Length: 289
Ligand SMILES: *[C@@H]1O[C@H](CO)[C@@H](O)[C@H](O)[C@H]1NC(C)=O
Ligand SMILES: *[C@@H]1O[C@H](CO)[C@@H](O)[C@H](O)[C@H]1NC(C)=O
Ligand SMILES: *[C@@H]1O[C@H](CO)[C@@H](O)[C@H](O)[C@H]1NC(C)=O
Image (cartoon, rainbow, N blue to C red; front, side):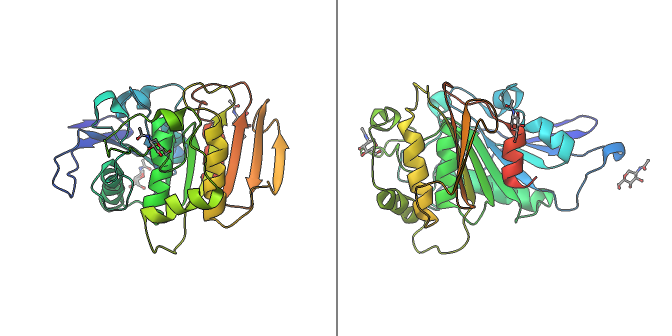
């Protein structure tokens, strides 16, 4: 299916899983062609992968007023890619071992394949690929950063859990995990870091810088998941868990921004529930867009 409008081309295509487990549902890639008046068209545009929450889809996330990434694409000329979950309930599979390891044949590999397709088909600059997501999409964002660190330059996730936190003891696909969602999955920074390292064993190349958003009043994914996620990524980057700088009321009132060196930033939103709304400006800034 191809839909064409004056300045935008929307393409949806099936992407086969390498494992031969079948074909995922439609994935939506929106390619932006700015008009000449505001031309920011680039020969090798950046790409932002935007991953939806449960009970959503590429199309409905695209149309969600709280997820303003298409506006950024219109203004700045980067391409956005909107994967759509093939699972019942449309949560992403962040519980099966297939998805929690590089090239395991799960949803994470399907998204990696979509990125490769976008790079090849739309001339995306592979050094400027970014990822954002909310809730289940944020969980998947952490998994993508762990299993495919070579694909992404920076990640900005809203209201998720650490990579691997939703693992299913029985190996089920796209399972809910009450222990993790309730904030009872606690581990040391080293243990959480090992979860990331074990998703792509032996990898020692660059990793995406991580921006982690969470609300203090989150009753779906307990706020403890914020601190556990910070522990995980600070360990991966080999930095301490004491912020190197903290800014109160930033980027807005009652949000606090904590930096842990240059590669990990936490933004904790006091009084905000599930899910923290995307701040396009702040995430674009993190990406350098
Ligand atoms: C608009 O930009 C395209 C691509 O750079 C160029 O080929 C075309 O001539 C431009 N059109 C006008 C009216 O400037
Ligand atoms: C939920 O996840 C934790 C790790 O966060 C894991 O130890 C536990 O086995 C999982 N629960 C189920 C029911 O699979
Ligand atoms: C988003 O972040 C920017 C700074 O990066 C800030 O100026 C702006 O107020 C924030 N937007 C909202 C809606 O809070």
